[in-house]
Image (cartoon, rainbow, N blue to C red; front, side):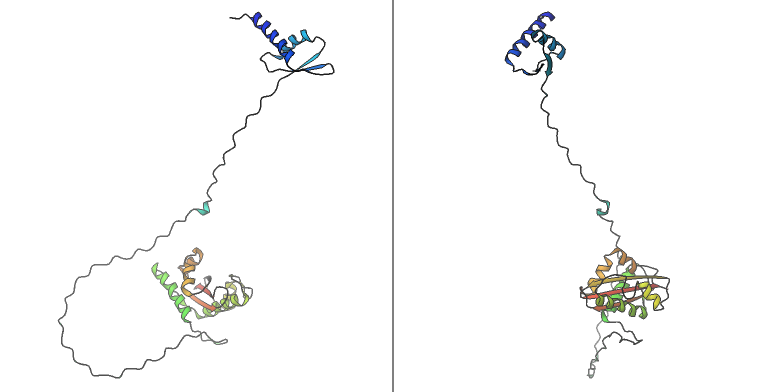
Length: 266
């Protein structure tokens, strides 16, 4: 073991040797000493005072280089709730078919030979035409009748009563579709007639519940599919409170055809 006195003498020797080799910068009456050893500032000053008794000594210890800190890892972003898949509504299951018993086959009987009859000539079927302006007679077009049939087929799947055609609503629905084509807009709020409820009220339509669906598409099937795929429009089609419907379809506009469905519950 090295005695404390011997360790002190060795430290003094090493400091003196260090000072002879290390550059010492002096400014006026102050001497700056750069030191990296293990001696405390008090011990080192006592030693240096013996060598430089007239100087004001300042011990400077170089600072270690800062170690780079690890970069923070990005936290995972929470998934927005509105992007979660919505539960699908259950589809009605078809009724199971009862097995049918085979019926006995009747024995073929000789058929009497029919006398030739003149074939009836086919009569041309009248095509539904939209009503003329100012006329009180309203006739559905083929596309309008097809859309009403599609709506009632959807209601039948869920056990709802079919909607009856209200021809006053048909006239209002056509006016709304034509207005959207003429004014080049797509909205429930018409710059000409206001809201659909304003149109019904001004036309004298009385109701307890009312609603409107509008669509733009190139065909009746595509318009119906788009309405059924929309939650709000689907709710109007399957609303049990509605009893009557009017459909107005007008060709034109940016989508090819404009569709308006007006519903009321009496």
